[in-house]
Image 1 (cartoon, rainbow, N blue to C red):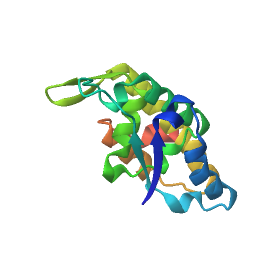
Image 2: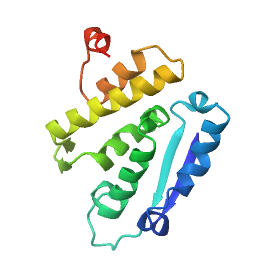
Image 3: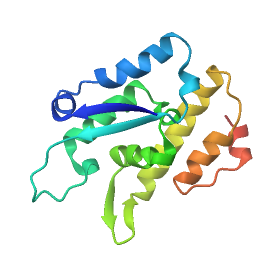
Image 4: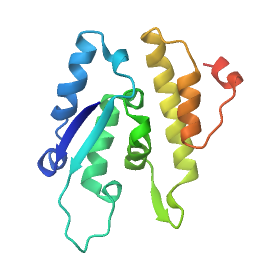
Length: 155
């Protein structure tokens, strides 16, 4: 597992250097596909004891993740899905609220996010020589969507 450490200064300055220090060498040496589902984020953002917000509800944290997503739109490929990093990443980018059953994403926003990720990941994975649809279908399932093979035939 590879952890990217984030603190308030990094997040507030929109400084992507902690992520770039990990990901860019993988890109440079062509080993990025060998790091599938390896990344985790360790976020240290001070909050007042009376602040009930989750990290995904703090604008400065979300903005940093938006910038990261713009730089690496295929980043879900690298996230450790078993450690809930895909769900947390999604929460950083998709409007949501917390209900009795946990996180509740805006359905239309989640659908748009998922489709954008499927398109970006599909293109990127093909460039990397990965032709399997299984990872993309599993990602969709993790976000409560079923994608048929016919959908991928359109790509």
